[in-house]
Length: 360
Image (cartoon, rainbow, N blue to C red; front, side):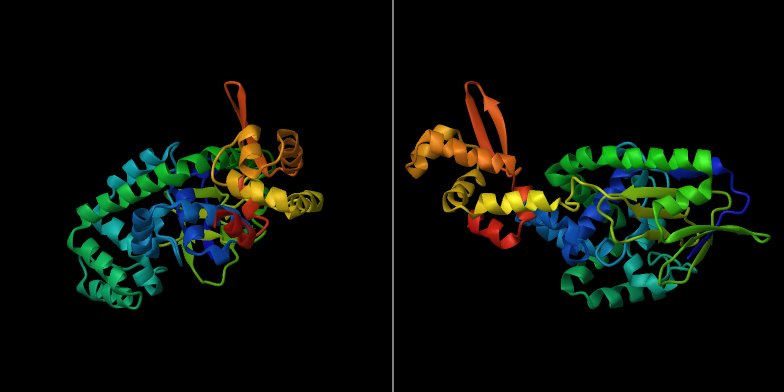
């Protein structure tokens, strides 16, 4: 897939994180956890904590991020907050919004463009026909979007805002800093060593080609596509949730956008062998396994755990020390009490069977 950047000033090539794009990547990971084994801990714990009503709404709209990514979820001009990016979406006209949102139903027309289903009866029938293959809820959603674009757009915005409140705001506080740092690094690399180095540093699957015909960013994907950044620019969006996916927005009429994955420790990167050994040894002890059952449900003091399990406070303290050294528990002070709680995210990385057993 090629992006023609011939004559494009370097200042029109931007590396910047996007809260909306990252939320979409996170929603894809929830919808297709098998694509993202590195995120197993995050997807397991986040999915388990979702309220049924929110989970149902996500399932209803997941065609926008499950097998592809609707272009409205890859902002060409990223903002500092999700609310600002959603405001930008609100300013988009209905035809462009609906055409992009229903992109999954019109994928074969993506590279050369197609009229919006709102104004073209053939595309409207196609969207409904392809939606029917995904079940009645998909059909109902597409019918609603075609019949009432403003109402459906407001529904989608509320859904994304509810996801932000339920889990994404906390996640963004952790990964947003890393993504901003990566974007700054790539920008500085482009300034000092040129675009070719910045592009290849973002992904080994991207290169800058230059010859007498001009300059092109080539993205190595099993699809064919061409676009031009003339008159607009190119935006590169780093993502912590995206690996192994490399998205390249290239449909006619849209500014090219590339979302590339970056390594991150906070979401379950590789763990040192010694750390895994410590954690397995810590949970292998029968009493510590029983303590995990309580600590997974809430924060407890040493005295409370001693009373609950009929052992002495010093014994509890010794067990907690082993678990803390392995990084399995967190502590917080409330007045004169020190409370301990299991770090479910870390435990989930040891295996879902163990986590299910302590939460059962």
